[in-house]
Amino acid sequence: MERIIQKPQLSKATTKRLSLYLRCLKGLEKNGITRVKSSELSKMTQVGSATIRRDFSHFGELGRSGYGYDVSDLIKVFSDMLETKEEKRIALIGCGNLGQALLNNNFRRNENLNIVCAFDNDPEKVGKEICGYYIHSIDEMDDVLAKEKITVAISTVPSQNAQGAINQVVANGVTAILNFAPDPLKVPDNVHVHYIDLTSELQTLIYFDGQ
Image 1 (spheres, rainbow, N blue to C red):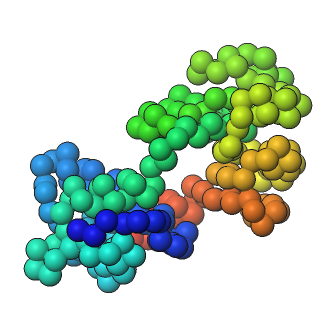
Image 2: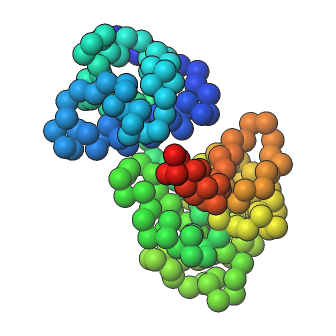
């Protein structure tokens, strides 16, 4: 297999699919499966075989005709692309039910992704400990983000309040934001926002389940 010298330029859609492939491949490896064909991976991921082969082509010659792909090789390549080798210190904005679930999980499968501080504007939460985390007031954000050297933020703030919270995050130099509110945010060009709309994701799942 060719060694990849540098990361290829990938679209957001392709990068998102790589995460899906990697999760499925790790499942295959766990079950003792050592090779897989694009048609088999297609059934697992609901991604067309042609799209899978096109995505894989960004990384050189990963497979062989008639043989398929070596599972461990694919895991290594995609892990190198997606799994950070340095700690990413994350701030959580919004500590409702979803925020608390994220605090409780805190990316246990990747030791380099760490939620290190949490914020909310609810007087019933601020100043208290939830899931082992002290909950800061939104008004403390400037000081805490600088002190904790935050580089990534996750926002579970509802759409009507999200822009104000994100403005404060961006003003503190954060350029990577995962946003659970579906409405688009206004951010500078150098700030990358990834939106997760749970309703849309569920509707997509139900659509494919009905086919």
